[in-house]
Length: 325
Length: 280
Image (tube, rainbow over all chains, first blue to last red; front, top):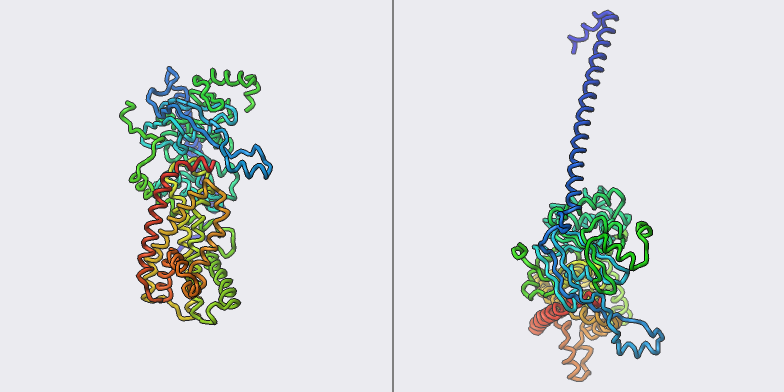
């Protein structure tokens, strides 16, 4: 400490100024060099990302537009034969109390046939869309394929090692609990074990993009946040067969893009998707085949454009009007 | 190629063995559902989990005021406090779980419609929830009965474990049976509250029944002795209050527990595929 202080007064003011200038010059040059290097690195990274994105996009295009035959695979994933589901709903045709007392004793209403003798085969790597008016039996059919609603007659066979995963927003979720607990509840409801969820927990949170909100009660989430978390839980378990009921476009624009990419990846890995939606334009773009249901019956099944235009002409809606979904 | 992969047939039902294996595999799910239910019920209150002890404390206070002070059932006997609270808390466990099975199935209709799992997980979870609540109520029990009459835990408290196991099995069986009745015929749910209240007054919860029935016809006394809660409460009073143990309490509780749990489980498994139709 003491041996440096005597050296300082020996410098003239000019010398000191020159030294300071030299030091400043050196620092400036150093900073410029660092900036240059950073810019180069950024450019390279951007180029790599662009290349990766292009490659991914190419892969997606390849996945979205499958083999020349139009059929992704000839291996069946789900075979359903002669499915029929009848419901006997409580109907209130005679709402007056006096008549109601008697009616309650003989509650034999004519059954509603929700699914009427439907047979279909879904192939591996295929995205099948189910269209039809409200009450056509689409959701009921999906539940039968999921194995949660046993049909009155007919049978469903699933080829694979996993039963189909029905993506339903927030099944098993409790809105009073934190997002974290809901990930566990939802995952376990879907058949995962706790260590499996432990392992994929960080991925799920990252995918959903919820960040710190994961520890807030799910009741405080916006509907989009809730949907993103539910989708992340369902998709992270790598389902072989994914069944979607009106929920495959969830969240904001960015998340819609991300979820669509994930589903395309799933198809590319020989996964299978069956989806029910009223978003006809989206189904046409995404699906390899469409199935059209009306009043429980399977009317037609085939290439999306053909089925969609038949469906639209049946409804008496022009193509332009249909674009607006 | 297709034949190489295993086939899952979703329209056929699993055998009993496969069902039980799957149920066991889902035990963590049942536990998380129960813990989630416990947390959710008090998540919006300031005192939070403390309510699980305050609730039985207040309930016990109300019954002590009515039956111990106003009606003075046991003429100022300080031992009555322990008698009443042990019976009340144990019976509350049965009363809450009795309807719990049916309620949890209707509350989770969406889960049942979309996910495939043994439906018995849901009633089991609701019984576990009741069991945890009952365990919480032991703290206020010992605080009150201990200070009032010196009914602190001792060697006799070990009897609590078998009593708790028999009681829980009994409650599970009852909950599964009631759920099968309530889901297709919701009207029964409206009657259940009244039935459970009558059942409580017919059980040795508030007063020792044999004393009250000294002048009643012999046949009625015998019918009331058949009450499963008489045997189960007898075991609890041995465990919590050091009452002399009776053989009937042991075999009565065990027989009811095993019998009802088996009956409930077997019949529930047979009807559970119909659940989505009733809940839709």
